[in-house]
Length: 162
Image (cartoon, rainbow, N blue to C red):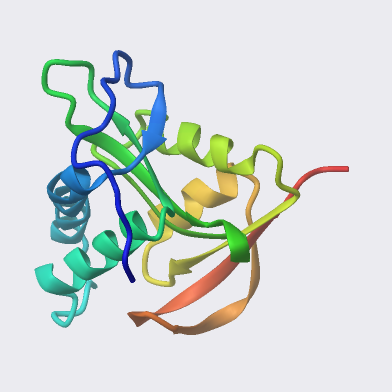
């Protein structure tokens, strides 16, 4: 895949303004995922830094990722969401601070102008499942393999209320 993306984002003055991710965001996004992994005892050892870096880099280069950043001067990524819009799949939501509502803000942006989204949550992570339930996602089916992740997952779907 060949893509040309800016190395540096346009300045963001507020953590409540999302923007497309750029290649300079890769280290911050990897750090958010690694912080989460360190808290999860069930993560398989096959999920390594190179694995995470490949997934984050792919999402950014494919144009799937949006980030919320800290106010300047730091401007570090505080949260990100990866959305495969073509398949209506939320691929990841990560926030530095649980309960900060940053993940919720990104998910609400993803819901705009859409009637349907789905997410496959790790089966062993009740906190992620709880977050998506609060956001209106409903479990569909039972435990099943995750195609690109070495753990079982639970498909959850959101439909715009009619």
